[in-house]
Image (cartoon, rainbow, N blue to C red; front, side, top):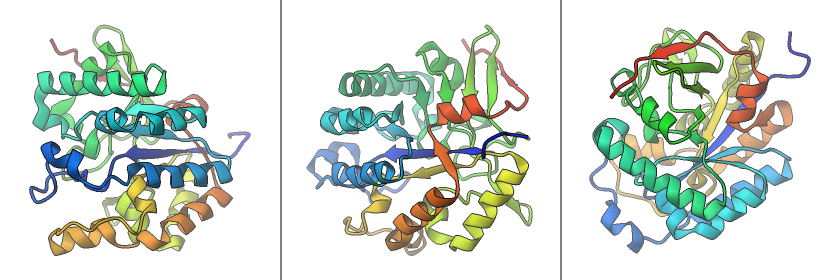
Length: 293
C-alpha cells in the first residue's frame, strides 16, 4: 500500500488554437504566423490556475511556439514546471517518417532549450501518434537525451494507440541497453472500450460524476491518471474554425466548464509532472523495443 495518496500526472500540450491535426481546412504551417495568436494568454491562465492550487505540471511545448513566444516558455520554467517537447510542427510521427521525425525533434529541442534555459528530457508525440508501427521513434528519442515519454495511449486510437497490458509507468528497454520511462495514458475500460476520461475532449464532454468515479477507480487499482489539456481549453473566446459538425462538437463543446472541473479534481486528488509520477509509482513490467538502425 502507498503511504500517500496516488500521484496523478497533470500535463499541458502547449499549442495555439489553430494547431489541429488532420484537417486540411485548418491554417497550414506556412500561414500560422499570420493567425491571431492566443497561446500566451491562454497558457498564462493555466499557469495562474496551477499556482492557485500549488500544482506543478509537465508542459509539452511545440518548438514552433517556443520560437515565437520564448518569454512564455521562460515563465513556465520560472514557475517551476517541467518542460518537454511536443515536436516542432505538430505532425503525426508516422507522417514524418524516421528522418523527418529526427529533424522535427531536433528543431523542437533547440527552440525549447533556448527559450527555457533547460535541457529537455520529456516528450509527447502529437496526437499520441506512436503506435506499433512507430516504435522506431524510441531509439531516436533516447539518442537525444529523452528520459520520459508520455506518447502511448493504451487502447485503439485513430492514430497511435498500443494494446499493452500495463497500468503504471514502465521502462521501454532498447536492444543497446538504453531505456526510456513511459508514463502512459491508461483508459478506463467500459463495455470493452477505452475511455480516456482525464484529458482533452473527454474531460470537456464527460459529466463530472463519471470523471470522479473514474479517478476513484484508478486510485483503487494503483493506476495514475494523466490529465492532458491544451491552453485553448481555458479560452472560450478563441476563434472558431469551420470544422465538420462532429469535429466541431468534439473540439469546442464544454469549454466553459473546464476550469471548474479541473479545480474540482485539484481539491480531491494529488497531481504532479510526469517525471514525479514515474518516480513515485511502482513500475509495471518493462517492454523491450528492438533497436532500429
